[in-house]
Length: 201
Image (cartoon, rainbow, N blue to C red; front, side, top):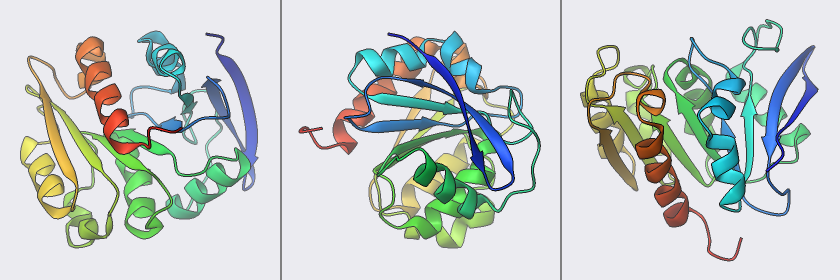
């Protein structure tokens, strides 16, 4: 499947992203952690696997990472603007590690603006503990068994707080579990998408 490199203007700064798959289907938006970028999702095959599985995959360089210049952002407005400009409705959002600080402020206020959230050991769960119950969409918490940065009990806090949450722990994987075991990560992601998204899409 072809993967295209594009950029759009969000607020006052350009945002770079990689895209694969058809527009006429459900979209998975992939954010990234502090040591990674949109290109990471190409490198481990996620963009290709999602496109071949029938989804539109959009991997975004957050401001100050990859090919996106640094910019001061309000996370909720930034995500809203990103989805509007890219004409993405009801995506499944994948947010590892640092990108939790972008995803969580949006998720706790977005109500039904997305179809699901794949939380890959995101930071900031304790900061939003009292608001997590506002996340009404299906949630999958993916953690590495050997994660030394974000404790697994953060996953339990999240899953217990939301009405439709589940947890997957990848054996022998660290904090960036999707990098340590891409195969197991992709299996859990695709199984979640089958549960979270309508079959007619």
